[in-house]
Image (cartoon, rainbow, N blue to C red; front, side, top):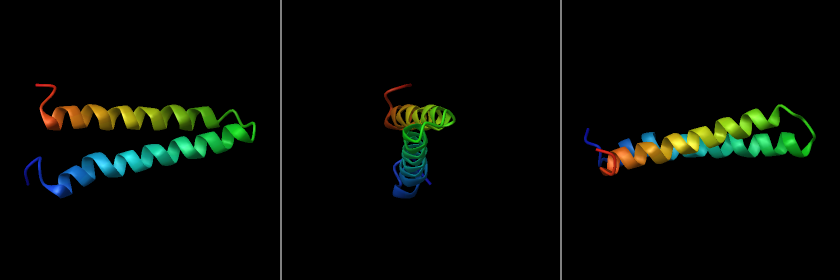
Length: 64
């Protein structure tokens, strides 16, 4: 399986992105309900999105 296969791109980029967006959405929902624990979900969600961006940069050859 090479880095350009669609399965790899799906596993490395799409699934973690969806998970990160879910965490951000859940966190924003909790923040809107005045729950302080929501900020942790938002921060972890942004962390997942940053990891996906770095993984994409590594896969595409920007960071060599």
